[in-house]
Length: 219
Image (cartoon, rainbow, N blue to C red; front, side):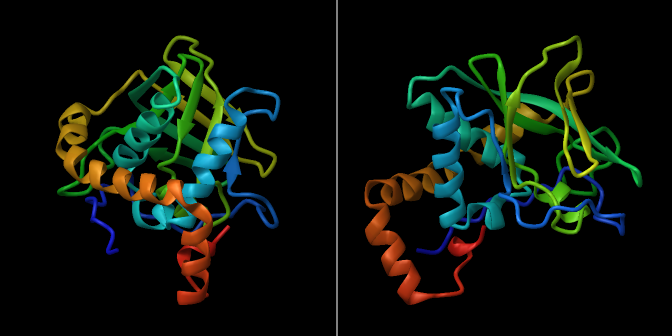
């Protein structure tokens, strides 16, 4: 099935040469601790999206990925919210702003969104631009505890020398309109995912033998 295209609204400046952090041999998912009730749900959701190639197709569209994660987890009984924010990723080479005011190119939408679960967990599955900025040496998806300290929604220090903050002191004014605009395409994407989830093994076997270099096999 041909994927329904979602507009590639990159939320930031194009990638530039940087001192890329070391990131070899690790999962591209940064998850909540294993003992947390969400750990398994996030891991399964990440695996499903990875096998369908959704990170390659939609990883730079935080609107699609956050809304998708929110719907999937809501169906499992969690309270979810698609929340507007921006993020700052920093290392020794400098800062990278994701979804901040003034960085959108013509035709793009300013702002970034994440999925907040139960008010205390932040999921960011729209990190395609960050991963490109760090020359592939970064996570495709992050799930972490919310700090909810003033305008700081969440903060992390990674062992590859990168620190990250998700902040709400500036939120793109066009976020709600963009989420509504992408809703029809999102429902088609979600339908394909639900079809896959009903019969994962048959789908993976068929995919494996039809295309051994499929994006669905990427880590």
